[in-house]
Length: 371
Image (tube, rainbow, N blue to C red; front, side, top):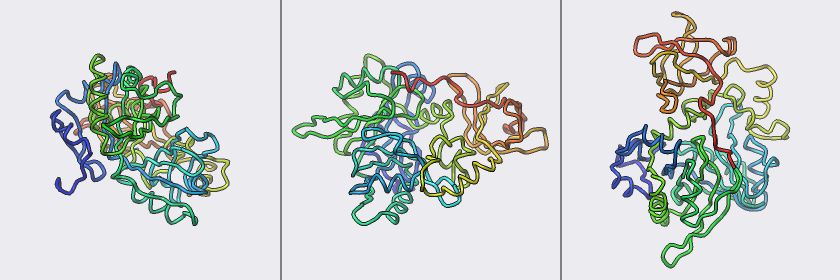
């Protein structure tokens, strides 16, 4: 199995740092380093961390009508933004189920870069290719580009020292040049992230990824930059209540119940799944993605049963972890709407019924949009 997994172009850097690996969407990626998840998590919350998220998909929609194709198929409305901006959006099926959640980078009228989840890239590309009119191409560049995420309160200082642009507004991006030997390599510097902290995501060609990683690590030394694995990325995003596809959102989940109505262009004439989600919105969802915080010492894990009383099952935990910031167990679950928003529920933690408080995420205050 390990031999069949794809590797990041930064794999040798991870090896040198003593990374422990796990499978993510067909890729062997760092789960954590010798520092451990809690220290990696804390580095992002208090200073700066760097992640390799090159397993994420990359697909380019190009040609006259590229923007129209994306806007008529994916859920959010590109009319809300403009060139040089990025947008969180959803690929839905006819029933309103979530095929994937992704970021669209609107470069110009003929180029939109999409960053889907690793496991769903091929399906998103297939659907868009089938819908593309003559003259519009949808090309899968999954294996051609790396994505590095520099996240935390000191992320600007690190990028400044490397010579990359900073200070642009949240969900906007700037294209910059990086000198690598005798070559000039383009880098897309986007004010996005999955941690709740101020930060940037950098898209760069595979052959330049190692050089960029090394420069960022050297530049961040004075602020204690820490290489962070996808374990810390998971605890950070869970503290923010950001849903993970394959766990919190799936083909069996719609945007309304997932709390993602804000990522739907309700006034648009067309997008995949439009009629279904309009009907769900009008009728009201039967369940909602809710946060849970431990009253005691219980730590929830995906698949654990959530109950209203000892014998009334409500849902299963979709995401659950120990919050390094709160020093408590936190989780997400699709809870029936009939349950009061501030109710206490039980979670079966290894045969013990632990009490949890229902809350509305995020679990910690975000600083991602700070100027």
